[in-house]
Amino acid sequence: MKILQVVNGYPPVDQAGTELCTYQLSRSLAERGHELYVFCREANRNAPEFSCRHETIDGVDVTRLTNNILVIDNPMMYYKNTRIESVFTDYLSSLKPDIVHFQHCIGLSASLIHIVRANAYHALMTLHDFWPLCERIQLLRPDGTICDGPEEGANCVACLHAPENRAPGPIAPHPILQHRWTQRYKHLCPPSLRRILKRLLVGKGMEMVATHTPFPTHSILLNDTSFRVRYLRETLKKLELLITPSRFMKQVFVDHGLPEDKIMVLPHGVKPVEVESKIKVEPGKISLLFMGVIMPHKGLHVLLKAFKKVDPTRVRLDCWGCPTTEHESYYADLQKQMEGWPVTFHGRYDNSALPQILSRADLLVVPSLWKETFSVVSHEAFTAGVPVAGPAIGVFPEIIHDGENGILFRVGDTNDLADKLNQIVAEPQLLQRFAKRMPAVKGVAEHAVEMEEIYHDLLGR
Image (cartoon, rainbow, N blue to C red; front, side, top):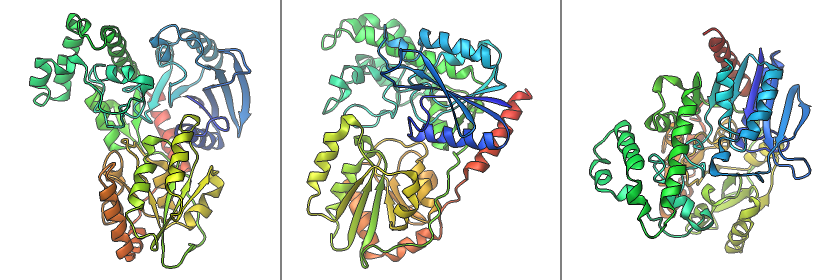
């Protein structure tokens, strides 16, 4: 088969979760004899905007389109970019793939899906996060609280009004959400009927919105956010199949109006971490581990606050990962706060170091504040026999049975997390029990076989 993967970035230039999943799948499919092509975006200030460069990586033909996001005529261009459409149309007509697998469209254009389907190509998409529902991707408000969803775009307006999208304190709800109809019906209606009511309010309540004095541009923003929500929902419906890596994530998109029978739950394949032997760094101490990019929504500050409520003579903590540029001050503050505590900040790590990192860990703590959809680091820990402590939201209740094979704690609750860690300190034998009950983790090669079967099924329709 000639398979095209469309994704927001690709290694070695970009190496976040979605990009690595796409790389591993593409490489495995290429090893199975398929022709693999990748069309992705990259930021490259040395190249003309919307130009392309080509390279071959591990048997995969990669085309990188430069989009430095310098040319934005209106908000719609973040998901319906006519300039990228033109480049992609020429690329598609030249390539003529058998199937197109969309992995992510951020930085590219969701309208590429319409182009693919209009030209009668088979197409599917793996949903890695909530970008089709949330411009901020994680369904988190600027104050760090969890958002239940766009509500036809009405919930999105306050986020766009927040100064630099990082406003401290509570976010004022949009007036649409304070309307008497909304308040009367929101707890009584199923999601499908709620959407209809919100659509009516958004469509017919603009005079009320326009006269709302705190933010006179509310009406303009609501038009933008409402259109985005509707457009991306209808765009996803154009695809033949949607894949989510967890049951929880499927339900989120079903509640948003996507057909349940069009969404398949299929966890990602994970490259196993082979640990030859466990290393006890300091006898008598529990070794805790944090791994991942350092950003506020990853919740490292929650773990560090909880850590200070545990006897420092009984525990130690290794933090692996580095901050994004805009969060360097956040990282520096955390380092300063933990001076004198048994915490080591190691900085950036490469995947080749995972065996060594995980061999020294007794428990991986994932303190995320958003509803993680899969958690690659948790699955990597499972393959190395390291138990996981995670928040009781998102995918974690699916992969962790509290007290059986790991620990669940209330999201963002430093006291609850500290209580769970103190329990481990008091009963370290629990870790051995957890390690014997690790959930099975699917490998990358097995996942490639599953995807191959799915592609064949679509081609047979």
